[in-house]
Picture 1 (cartoon, rainbow, N blue to C red):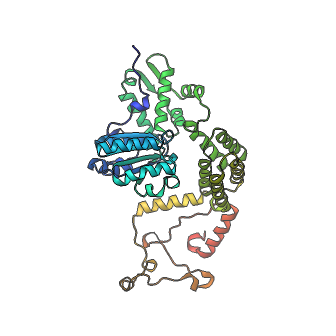
Picture 2 (cartoon, rainbow, N blue to C red):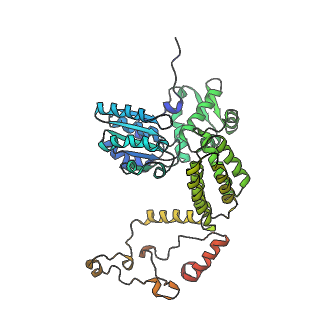
Picture 3 (tube, rainbow, N blue to C red):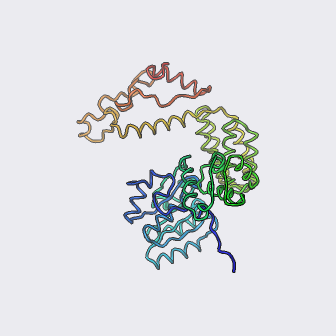
Length: 423
């Protein structure tokens, strides 16, 4: 008689209660949207967008279980229209079902079209999971019928809680004497991925004879380096290589960037995935230090979408070299972060009356638009009129970067806004 199959640790540790989830409290904490929706039993179709290992699959299964609906799971990598229709038929038999589709961004248009009718009729409550921006890959008709929820990267505390829970609750691990003396290396190799972190822990346990294990950084490094895999576009190396690729361009190293580009090309990575990452970097890390970078990155994305491998290799190479050797600035990235934080801190401040829209007489009678100074009526097409809400007037959000292009911007801002940029 064969021994029973033991599920991997990451599978055994899927949450059974809200309190078991690590992170995502903005969605599943008390009174938050997904928790309220689940507890009311009124699910809408949704898409979970976030990095790997943050709980997308676990959350989908948990929600389905809580609302007592049949749960079906498909992976977009190895499922087709035939598989979709089979699930839809079963859902019709039950009256309604939850369908979880992992990596939904990999479904082509015909596959998404096959799903659309069942979602529209409510036979299928769709929960999709994606690491990619769904607005790029999910058809608008399907996207309009789904709520998109952003799942955030797990923090250090979240990852440590995952380890603590595994040692405390797992039926196998709790019978062993395991001491987590050092965890920095484990957290590093996890890359913020909870599933990968549990895989690392399980690997360390399996590599250690006996029931007593003291985990140190040196031990973790030694064991992991022996098990390092080659590039796998559907596995963990996928994220390590793209991370190294982006950091090489950000660090102005065209040689390393080209090396990691070649790793992805040889590994069969989707060229649109590569081009999309460069598009983000062009704005996040170059920005107004060289606005042409965004134009070239956009053209690259459009080109690789049209022609694909192997012809697109040269286009990718040209763009990588241009971005890597371009001057850098993250001023736009910092500015929007600062602006978003300011909005969260101050709430919905009233728009100053002179800036408000005035489509009706009543609004004009209420002084909407009164006092607005039209910039083109003044010399140089500029008038130093405060546009911020009164509570935060004078606030400076954008600080130009220290590069030739943004120094010109800084000089112009100082000329126009002496009180804000006159330092």
